Length: 544
Ligand code: HEM
Image (cartoon, rainbow, N blue to C red):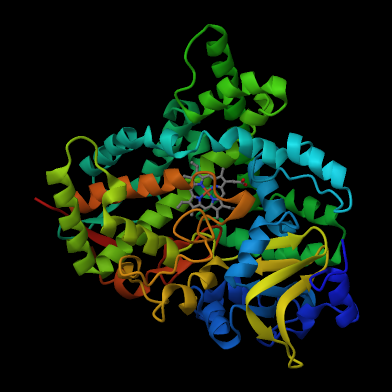
């Protein structure tokens, strides 16, 4: 690479090889062992709510600042849109090691979330050209190429009527576990019908029946991201701490320990992998008999896998089977929690709830055939605002796989007073990308970015410049090569379910839910009570 003003070599000359991250300002570290990681991931321990520390730091230090990770490691916290866009789209960055290890544990080595692109030295231009043309060695790119068109808009639209009948079915029963003393139903997020509905959606998308799934996998799956999520957060911190001081094999051994969290994860992965192999086997047998198999995602993958295998661009049967653990959990808790937060905000904002119900009535009276969910301005503004304020993964790690320079939208001033417009990072350095902070930038979402306000999507306050992320400029589904594969499914599921629920029920706060329901950062952001229990008590009344 040439020694241009933007090259890592130039920056090394300027800063004498010393990591510039040390010169970037940030909050003082409360602990050498844990740095700021406990405040960031377990704020409740300090009597604080979700994001309280992070958003205070954002206000004090701006969209790029330095915090401390375990054992005195420096970490950049990044919410600057240009920097984020660069990190997500550049081959210079991959998932961070801690997250990577947990994903391998949960989803298995063959899953889309774990396979990698081949890292080629930048000087090897011919190899780069060959790689680009044939995806040689780039397993992630090959998998995405095989899977992307099974998750595109026309395929997702096919599921609208299926989702609608499931949403209708869900409203025939009480939508929660508890009934209060007045006989009203209380919706709860933990283990409620919303969640069961999501797993039904998933099964339909992938062509899996309840019988296929089996009780053992259902209960194991439901434990993955919810009740054990807190121990997962603690586990991540522990793995991080271990990883930096000890050889990597030690953290692998640690993950094999018979702790409750790791045991459930291992069991779930095993059961889901068995299921994946069985389904692929059945689909292949059906294809051999000349039967149609392309009526669900798994069938589509097996059908095209057959055709594409010869071009070495498709996925082998083992590779398709290996997606089961990921596909069975990726869309379940994430979408269920997003719908739960949506119901909470409807209960908090009765006026918005009434306006949404009115929009639904207009759509019902005007439609000739299908409901055109995309043509409902308030419904979509509301969904965007839910996904902005309650970003499922508020923070993520990314690691530089070679020396790189991160460009910035806004210049920052270092501790020694220099103004910089880009930050060089060395190979192996880990940065924290912060969707939740990005979603609170006044420059992007308005001066009231901390408030829940769907109208910002209708009056043009929400900025759509410097496009980032696949949906509404949001980072809820991340961006770049690792963008959520199922984001279109998630949006349609939310549109259908909210349409049906708001049409048939009214939602109000209970004495419990008003002040104490707050998001908790664990595996995914979820509503919890002040005691940390996962729950969303709401009064739900059927509309006559
Ligand atoms: C509101 C709902 C959802 C949210 C917020 C969400 C969010 C995300 C995020 C943030 C990632 C990137 C993780 C990372 O790289 O660290 C991701 C990846 C993924 N998501 Fe989703 N997701 C949702 C629903 C779904 C659904 C419904 C499906 C499947 C039908 C799905 C399938 C996947 C898959 C397969 C990946 C891995 C992509 C890859 O590594 O290339 N997601 N999702």
